[in-house]
Structure formats: structure tokens, C-alpha cells
Amino acid sequence: MWAKNCELRIALLQYSIEWANPQANIGLLDERLRAIAGRAEIAVVPEMFSTGFCTDRPGLAEEWITGPTCRALQQMADTYQLAIIGSLMVTENGRLYNRGFIFRPDDTPQYYDKHHLYRSGGEAEFFTPGNERKIFDFRGVKIRLAVCYDLRFPVWLRQDKHNLYDILVCVACWPTVRIQYWDTLLSARAAENHCYGIGVNMTGTDGMQMDYVGHSAAYDTWLKDVAGFEDYEEGTRIVDLSIEKLQHFREVLPQWEEADEFELKTGI
Image (cartoon, rainbow, N blue to C red; front, top):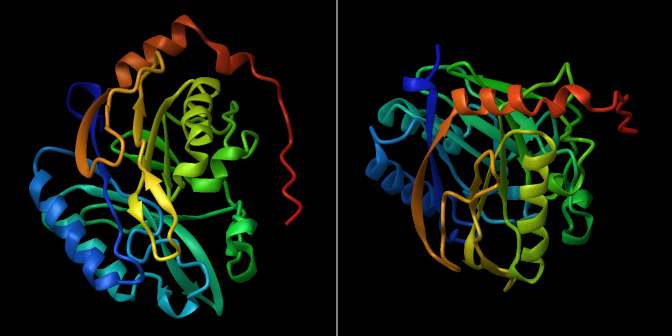
């Protein structure tokens, strides 16, 4: 079933994360979701929304589904009747994952484990990479989820005839010192995959004294950022993405049909 008028209303939540404090971050998210209940169908939050990018603190990881953060996410999705997309640190079968998620109202949550781990930030030392290119269906709309560093690897996110999606959603803790790459890569991934591009980044300063300017964005079919966040702004932007418009755009310019065939070998 399509969203009303073939549109999907998505809220981008850009804000500062309380370092290593899941309880505080869950409470903060609940307040923000309560404020947009009934006004959006999907809410997107930054990478590792419950802890910040605490790659060297495995003790903060929780069990998938049964952990308190997952239970809180499902309760919020059910209560506010919207899907929530982000990532968090989970432990499963003795391994750590930076797990991208989509919690849907009254439904089973789905996940994607971050494939490209940020070695320079210590992530690869503790975490296990995922190895599945997953596409999620939400009300007839195909969503591809990426987590931060994944954005630098176009082949991993490449659409092909067997791997079609309508919206690329990237959640991140992308620091100010490299924000120019975020701006360029997010728009490039949307352009080359002929899809909408949604990116949500955090703001403020984390526990490692890294600075985050934000620059969350929502790129339409003409690569216009329709979210319009200011630098360091803490706030929410709600955007309407027309699937009908995207389909028309692809019919007029069927570039995705002309892409080269390739075989992806991850080496994992």
C-alpha cells in the first residue's frame, strides 16, 4: 500500500547525543517523537543515537530485541505510529555490531549491520561487519539503509536491476572536520542511484571532544536539499517525498537501466 497520494512523509531529527547515556537519549528521542506524532510516517535519527560513537565501550552494547533500548524503540513506534530509523550498538552471539534498524509500528523490527567499519575511529577493532545488502519495504516504498562510513563506498550502495530502491537513508556521526565529504558523498550517492537521499547527522561535541556541525539533508530528484538545516541547529525537519514523482523521473531518464552489470565480492 502506498503512502497517501504516493507520498512518504519523513522527519529528520538532528540533535546532540548525550555521551554514553542510553537512558537520557531514549528520553530525548521520546520527547521529539511525541512532538511529531501524526505528522510523519518515518523518523530518522543519528548513528548510535543511544550512546554516541562509543566504539571502545562494548559494555554499552545491548541485546537485540530484548534489550531496553530496543524495547523502548518498539514502544515508541507503536505509541506514535511511525517507523524509526537509526543505529545502535548491539551484542549478538558474542559479537558487537553497529546495527542500523527500522522499528515499524505494530510490526517486527528489521536491521542492517554496518558493513564498512571506521578503522581510524577504533570501530573495526571491536565490531563485526555486516555482509548483507538489505532493502526494506515500508508501505510499498523500497528503502536502503547505510551507516556513516558506508557512504564512502559507492559499489556497496549501487543500485542494479536486481537491487532496486527508492530512498537511500544514511545515519551518521560525521565530524565537522570532514563534513565537506559528507555533503558531497550523500548527494553523489543519490544522483548515481537515481533515488531520494536522506542523511541525518548529529550536532554538538561528543565525549572524545569531536565537533559535529550537522548538515543533515534530504535530496529530491533534482538534488535540491529540501530539509534546510542551519549549522549546529538542533531541530526537526519534515519532508514529503513523492514516489510518483520519482517514478516519472526514472521513466524520463532511465539511467539506472543502463548501468553496467557487476558482481560484488566483499572479501569477508
